[in-house]
Length: 62
Image (cartoon, rainbow, N blue to C red):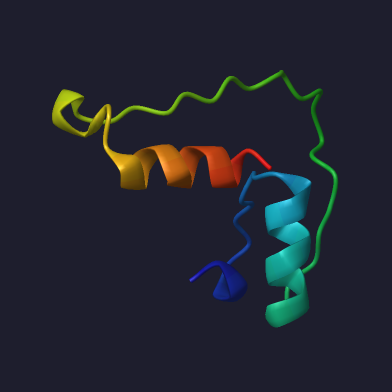
């Protein structure tokens, strides 16, 4: 859809660069100043102490 339109998709540089290599896409700077984005991880309380979640979160942080 994006490749057949004149729409912009705002994302992180790492994500954009990765997919630009895989598809016929260009990475361009945004035309306005960017604000700092905060990211949060949320999960259900029944999974809070789950070993799989703990491994996944700690593995992603490396």
